[in-house]
Length: 417
Image (cartoon, rainbow, N blue to C red; front, side, top):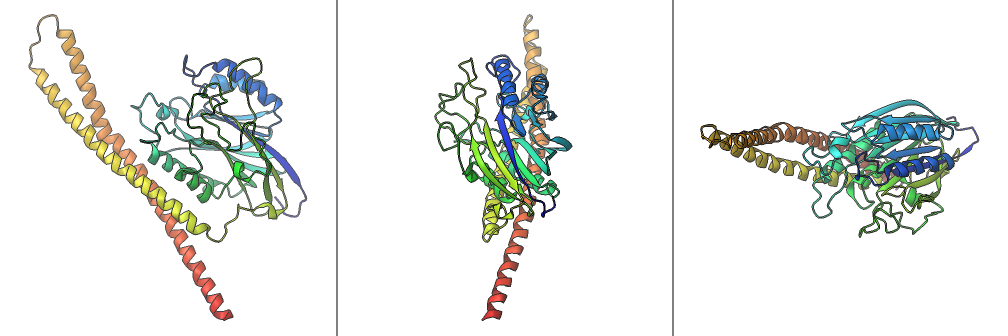
């Protein structure tokens, strides 16, 4: 974008975790809610829409058909066993796409959580909208199922670091960078700080000049008291986010931010178990609007602190995996011993089928515990080691830059003195 061009462009960005698990009773009123979501998108005058948990490709196709006039361009990110559940709808032409699947994403044996089967990733659509080239990133990080015992904390921090690295590596040609989705991260958590500080993104909720929240000024999007599916929640949180940045030649401001959805018209249900988020971004050639987006004095120290804490958390995750390897190894040894003991036992007539079933179960325990102890645990450790190595490089680079900056300032002060 040539800096001498005079322009102002408002872009309305919408994101929603749609809670679209295509299993009976897993996501209540799914068909009715998706119909309502599609109807809302056709009337919302949105420029960019990022949706999460659209697990059924059929639901995506129906949304495409509903919104084809208002949002003629769309893309679905395929990943994992179920698909990533991520899709983007936009007024502007999608000219390129990239997907990065996270190296860590929970555990296959935690079926009740299901994140592993979703193939969590970060997807990028390069969009030509008006005079501008947008890099729009959609993601949905691993959920936090327990505050007291967050067994996925290191996975989520690793995903956050990969998110920041992916954005840093791919946004060079973009006029505007937008990250939207369910990060499963509160603003006080390390993963959120890694994404914001390392990728140097502004949080639309914090930067908005005119919050138009329907309920309060906290921006809570999950477990809110007014949501019909989470009204019993005791800990409402802000985990769905829209973040942005721009290149140095243009300016960007967040004019409004709001939670645009309430109750589905004609039904006494919410659109999802999450609240939607809308940000109105004003892009212009006024570079003074880039407050909070460009590196400032002290940024390096803050980023180093955040990245160092992230490395510590991932290191704790490595220790936990090492301990789990011993547990799975012990289960494997015990199972092998039990299997060996049953080989020569003569079972009474009529109980042979029970004996066969028992041996099958023990054999399955042997196979699974061996796989977890030898293969999956090693893969998990390697992924965490890769993340800590990357974090170390980033911290070292920031340290060298900080040292060089101090030496240059000292030299200027000495010369002026």
